[in-house]
Amino acid sequence: MKGSDSGPCSWHHMSDGQLLTIYPPEYRAWAAASGSAPAAPQERSRTDPGPLNSTRSHPGASPPPLAIANPPAGAVYSVDPTLRREFQALPLRAVTERPTTVTWRVDGAMIGSAPSERALAWPLAVGSHEIEVTDAHGRHARTSIVVK
Image (cartoon, rainbow, N blue to C red; front, side):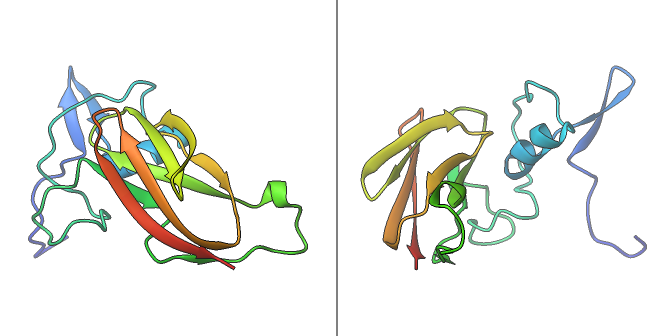
């Protein structure tokens, strides 16, 4: 765009004469699910934090090594009485620097482990909940939600 202050694109690179797209961490799961990313994402250092990392404190900050992408902090969910409970689950998603395994806990109880590139479904339960994710390096991220 004319007059834009943006620098060169940090997602697209030429490699061996072909265009290579390297998605930032917050988009890797989406890209893999949509077939837009290679089966094994390449690891690389990234100085551009990407456009949608809501956990950084200011635009130039580096993304945290582990963050919860879903659910967002303070979210309020409602159980639908017209749906069977097995169809009412919340996808827990983490953003990591590099693909790894993450372990999820809700209110201190282990829910399960999954690759960081995939969501883990947690059945909704009425009440206030503390959700925590831990990566293979022992780093933690937490958020709180309410289910009505």
